[in-house]
Length: 248
Image (cartoon, rainbow, N blue to C red; front, side):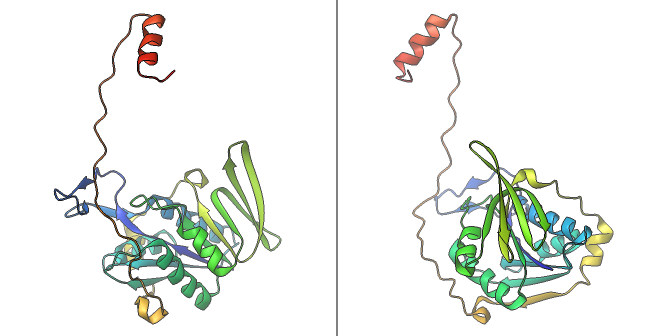
């Protein structure tokens, strides 16, 4: 069984991002970048399935600039077997990403497609759902547990009322949530070994996908600073303050 895992290069989750002074974009100059945390969980789950003998090959794919190769090398160091880098310096929107992954999937024919539920830069939470629709494949979103058995995949996910488990016929698209696993620490020898693993370089044009933007961002702005709280001396004063603020 082959697994295809999509990974994205984003600003490291420990970094506090800042908006450029003209409000045109987020300032990422000299900022630490890393693999999207949800995608890291997707890679870890694929590797665990391979270690359990459920998956025979893992192919990692990333879309973006030249430096995305570093992100793919991290995926290879975690345990992926091959990587595909679709290189473009353009900002690629979720629909274009889904179309590119669909094209790769049609070539690779994976039985399992794993993606992070969202990227922490745009928080779109759209690509996995769009990919499933384009492939006409069953999908399990926000996966907290994944079990492969009897030619299908069982995905347990959180819902408002508790937990829901869905059985999906393969091939299937799964988006991973935080509770699925804790990604392993990548050791230096594994990073060195990853440099010898195959990494294919392509472009969106080679896959026949137009990545021209369809959305226009008008401006970026940082959220307003939180106001300091106030201390009250009694329940009556608290109720009065809440009534004045029209909260109750």
